[in-house]
Length: 110
Length: 116
Image 1 (cartoon, chains in turn red, yellow):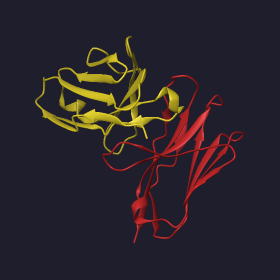
Image 2: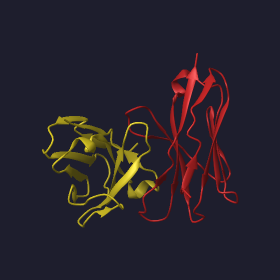
Image 3: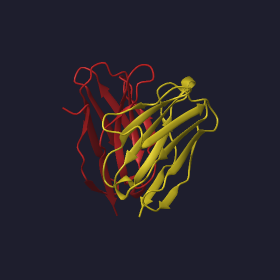
Image 4: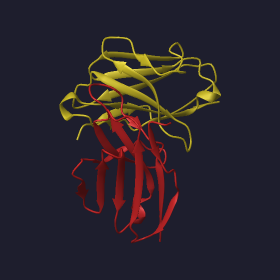
């Protein structure tokens, strides 16, 4: 079983739509959780950290369910510029490398 | 935010040559840097963890004699692809995690290597 699993998509949605991505992780020792965004042939960029209480940043809402080992990202009012690959990322204590999911591809269509 | 500079951004070389990629943390010290490789439409794959002043830790299946990593200072790590072959053509990305900024990881802009 992969350590971090995501639906690869693609998700093709019209502008203005709400879209949700899910991610599951297998290691209960995971301590930190993030969503990164990666554009084609570019480096990943941190979108937001994910906290147990849930957190929101503008049109983006992230939630963590530790009991189910499940992370979600909700994007409201999708923009064309939201088209990218969204990476679910899990971290551990110390200098252990972060573990990346394979990413979910989103295409927002006019 | 923290800045990681990676050079060169693009390299085209002949088969058999060696290519060096530099990764610098510009505004923080990074005792640990990570090197990833990404093939088209594939996920990021961790190649190795670069530790300042000591040997790098390589992931299973990554040849340490082919992908030489040097982390001689707290702000610079280099990856050298020795005797490059066409199958080494890929997008190589470095990253660093500032000790004072918690678990967040900051990435260099990547190097697109094309071996002819």
